[in-house]
Image (cartoon, rainbow, N blue to C red; front, side, top):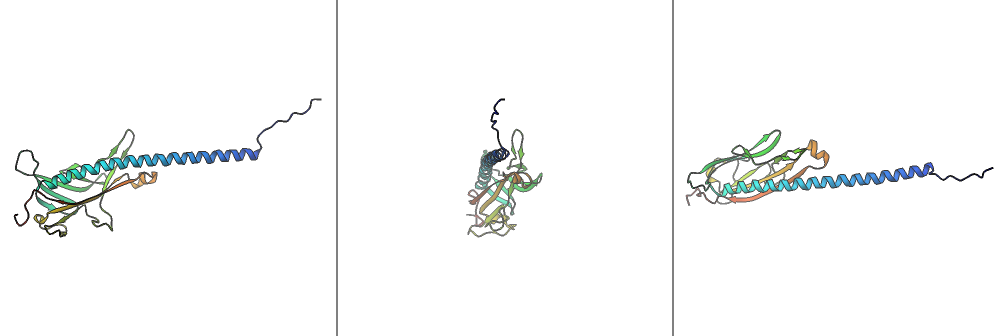
Length: 207
């Protein structure tokens, strides 16, 4: 008669404990992967929004500093007569308009968008320009206007010739609440230009 041999194997309790530990480790790894992926996406969006904000600010500030006169001044629209420096003394009209395009708000300059959608190989993320929120000094106003004595002008400005300084504030947002917010990648970048003097135009008193 052969002696019985002992066969070692996992018990049910050991198997359950092992599977539980493996599941915990896998869940932690997946959570870390998603966290890092979302952070990298937000950083990428932040960089793109910063570039777009810099381009918008440069364009608007350059026009303001070469403005001969303001012909329309409201909280979300601004029309300037600008010297372009192209060898002519005749100013060119530039109209800035804040409006909705495909359900996102953007800023256009003579109809050309200054806010661009983020595009990639497999994704298109809308970039929207938001007005300063309630509680901000310029709440609800893309533009604010000041006269020669630094007084804030009431909008819409009835006498655009009284405008001597312009303040420009906005928030760029990458993504929409229905998609990027649920994914955890909704990104915002806030800009306030400070007061920009219209350096190349005469003051209202002719000086």
